[in-house]
Amino acid sequence: MKNEIKSDADYQQVMTKIDGLMAKGSANVTQDELSEIRTLAQQAQAFEQAKYVIDAPTTLIGMVEMRMFEMKLKQRDLAQKLNISDAKLSLIMNGKQRPGVDFLKAVYQQLHIDAGFLLEHA
Image (cartoon, rainbow, N blue to C red; front, side, top):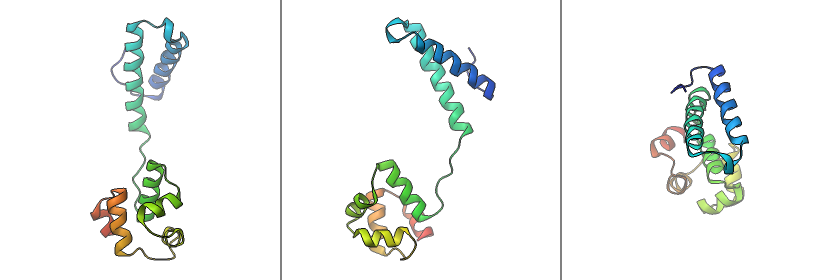
């Protein structure tokens, strides 16, 4: 098998091979086949990551929303985590109020957003 997927056609072949091996069921797959599935899946993942690049957010609100998604936080949970009211967070997230130093400090400490990013985008 190839070491690298270079085209959509290669990717489809790899996925078909994975599907075929997995259709056997976990009880009927040999150790060699299991190793092959793992190798093929890693190749497919590398191809997907190279092909489907998602740009990082370029705004403070975008970065906060991304962190909320990553941390599985609702806006109310984020407000509690940042020690601010739901209303204040809503105003900031909707662009109706500029974030203050306390908000930026809490975002840096709780969401681990780079300080340089915060300074550039606040």
